[in-house]
Image 1 (tube, rainbow, N blue to C red):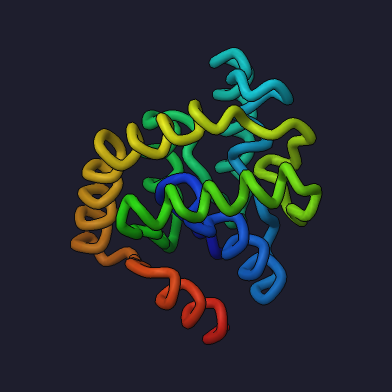
Image 2 (cartoon, rainbow, N blue to C red):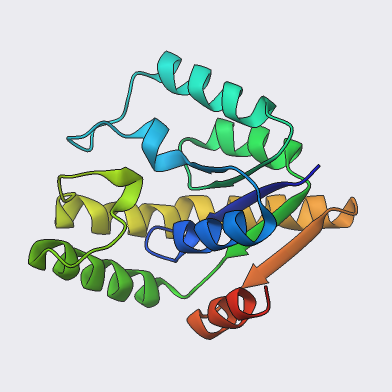
Length: 170
């Protein structure tokens, strides 16, 4: 049974990678953005999110990408059989988020985060990227280090080129 958790900052390619792996490995894909965010980019009530997340990680197989809240990340990582950490420099996330916002505004974005119809506010999006880089990424790196030391498969992708090569490799 494969359970793959893809972690990292916003606009790093987590969902794109998850869609690819779900297809190539024939695993169900769960996008955290779909169960965490409401259409107006406010979060769902915590009890609803916890129920949805709990049901998702109890499945025998999955690929889950995204954040949610830190408590759920810990539960997801503990249950995963494989971890993929997308760990790009901060500027790359800002750049990719700006590109995504422009594509969304132009109507050319193929896969909006969480399947949303409404573009997230750019200022808030950039705040989230900053906060995740400063507060979450050290925790995510530590979780990956800890689980790798316990024998879990951990893949670290530190550049868009690494991500592209990983996707091309299967």
